[in-house]
Image (cartoon, rainbow, N blue to C red; front, side):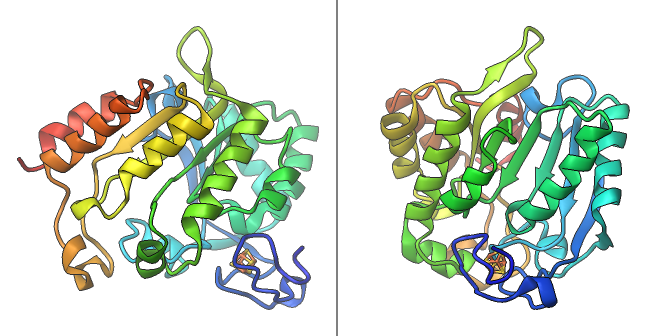
Amino acid sequence: MLAECCLCPRHCGVNRLIGESGKCRTTSQVMVSSYGPHFGEEAPLVGRHGSGTIFFTFCNLRCIFCQNYSISQLGEGSVVGSEELAKMMLSLQAKGCHNINLVSPTHVVPYILEALELATNDGLYLPLVYNTGGYDSVETLELLDGVVDIYMPDMKYSDEKTAEQLSGIKGYPQVNQAAVKEMHRQVGDLQLDESGVAQRGLLVRHLVLPNRLAGTGEVVRFLAQEVSTNTYLNIMAQYRPCYKAFDIPQLARPLNRQEFSEAIDLAHQHGLSRLDKAPNSLLLKLISG
Ligand code: SF4
C-alpha cells in the first residue's frame, strides 16, 4: 500500500518507500511530536492514571482551524524508528496509563503495526485507541480488525463542500460514515470496566462549529439510525478560531451557548443518550452566552 500510497482515501499513489510523500507529507519516516500520560481526553480514556497518548506529526487532513496545526500542518516533531515507537508504548504502560492512544494514526498505520509487533513481544497488553480525524479507508481499517480495541473517530462534517473548503478533502461525509460503520462492525458499542475505564468499542467525537458548519443534525441522525443509539458520543464545545480560521468570517468567533445547546438537543431528539458529560458541563460555563 505504501509503494503506491493508498493508505487513506486520498489515494496519492506516491512511493513512500523510496522517500516520496503525498498530501500527508510523510515518507517512510514516522515522526512523533510528543508522548505521555494525557488527562484532557474523555473520562473513560483518562481513568485515574491518564491516557497514554502518542502524537504523530502531520495528518491526512488540512483543517484550517486545527488547534494542533504546529504538529499536523507545520511538521513539529522528530523521526522515530519502530523500536523507539515500541519503547514509547511500553514506557506509557509502565507509567500506569490505561491505554495507548494513537493520535492521527491514519497515515502511519504500517509503522504502528511494525512497532506493535515489537511491543507486544515485550509485554504490551493495554487497549489500543485509534484516535483519528475520520478520513479513513475501509481497506486500511480492515487491516486493523482484531488489533485496535477502541476506535475514536471524529465526525467533522455532514456537508461535502464544507469539508472541502475547511479541511481540503473530497467526499468526507461518505468516506467518514463508511469508516465509522466499519469501526463499529469491528468493536461494537463502547464497553467500560467496573471502574468506568474503556476497554473496547466506538467513541465518536463531534466538534460543533459556529453557524452550524459541522452539520450536527445529520451526524446524530446517522449515528442513531445507521450505527447504534448506544453510541458513546462526545459533542465538543471547545471550538476557538485559530490558524487560518480568521480567513473565513463564519469561523472567526467561538461557539456560543445556544449553538452548543442546539447540538445536544439534536442528539437527544435522535435517541442518543450516551453523551460525554463532564468536560462539556465545564465548557458550558466557559463559552459565551
Ligand atoms: S496516507 Fe498520505 S500519501 Fe498516503 S494516500 Fe493518504 S495522504 Fe496520500
